Length: 447
Image (cartoon, rainbow, N blue to C red; front, side):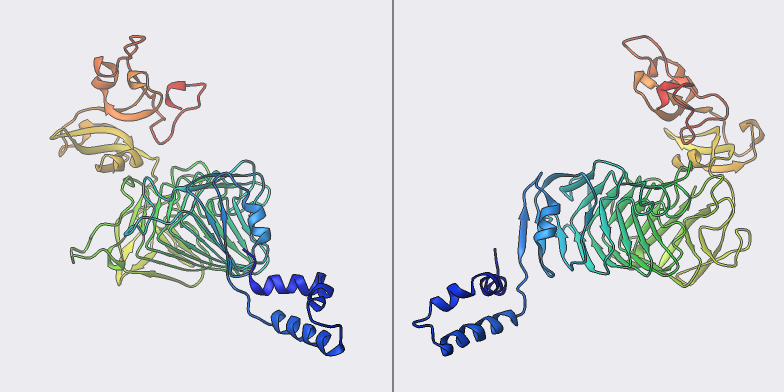
């Protein structure tokens, strides 16, 4: 749809003779009237328009056709891009299919609008100082290898509002697996979900802000994001600009449920229910824990449920502190960082099928079992408070490629035997675990 202002502008620019010819005569007065009409029309404020793009359509063309203030409305379905979607200086809204009433945060079936990158570039790119809004979108498979940062969304000297979006399987060769805010940018992120994104150089598995930028993450879930070869990086790891985190669940394991629970039992799920689960964040040779802030920052209303977080710096790190003595201020409470490595081996006591068991495994695997980890204890027999029952990292149970923690008898017995080949599961050898898989050449059943 072409608005009145745009239509009249085109008419005045290209068809002035037609406009004036429509008057009763060619007198100077009527020509002047035509000129006045054009001048007035050119001064009208632009009317925001909505541009609809069907599933599989070209979003690039829609952005080029859009004017500031317009909304580009996408449908449910999949869109594949052959180069980054750049908002080219336009203050526009890129919006997916609207959710059902009452749905405010991504879940298993929504957002239903998915944008895939098909090559080594980010999905979204902002570089011209604009403020753009992205909402109701599933951003996936971004590969910021050439540009380096922001696998899903790179913001350079611009401002982004991200609402109710899902970012997963995005990779940055440098910083910010999902989102990077750089060079004085601002990122306001609400009601969103970040999972399985990766930063290659230890800075922001999900979100990164440099020292000149500002990022806020509110009412969101950050789960299982990776950096370097580590298991996970706490998503908001090393947010080194001015950062606030509030009302968000930042966790590494147990994220099958996207919702934040009523942790304080007040009958409401709100900012007071922020949980920062600082478990198994970071891994050698990584340096930082769940959230790292090197300048001003604000961490509001949260609960530290586990602080065994890092190799060098704490779960929430402030410049000038070290892991051993870092005081983590969170909702008025202080917690000190405990620096056990998540891939460190030890004994784990845990409950399974109503009984207490013990196995030697990594700290991260022990956390998956909700167990109690004893670093440096190499044999369960050395523990007097835990009934032994060996558990192993088992690959290929029933012929299914993958790894899971199982009792050794189950892994090597009939319960895991592949009915097609008669082969049982294969326990991993020492030095490997489900969170530290061997190369495919060593054990293809685990990949």
